[in-house]
Image (cartoon, rainbow, N blue to C red; front, side, top):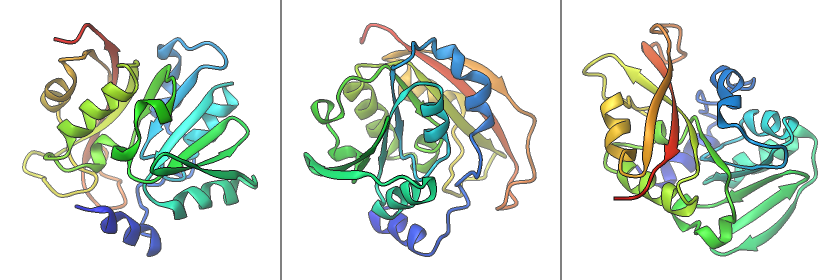
Length: 215
């Protein structure tokens, strides 16, 4: 899976992963992060998610990262906001009000460019990556956010279902990717939902990750 895969998905408007409303798991569990007004929340692989605006409505400073510039432009266009754009390292930073999105490869985003992060909200990043990319992503995220606490939403598909994206991420996977830097706590596990647009059956699992001392 390479950048072209995602650019083509956005060009063809094949974005079934996009939710038209704020994510229900975020709304239910956001307060677990215990953030004060003005805290800075990082949303990796954010697309044009309505979650960005919802977080901003909760008095958060919101920072996204998205490979597709088309997705970034659509977010601001659909929100009716005229942003500014500037170079930021190897990426572009597109900003309006309390929301900034880094357009480009998340692996080109370093800690200095990203700035201070108080929490991470990951609904669509880990599950978008195939297994061979996830360890690198998890390590990169922890390093560049100083192991900031995370609200992580994963999907577990039926055993043997290896299709994706989105990909199945099990509890064992979460522990394997994050246990060296975080305490991992499962907050919620839904009953399997067979009503997905792609016809697959999935269980949604919500995790709260809090940093510990690196080994």
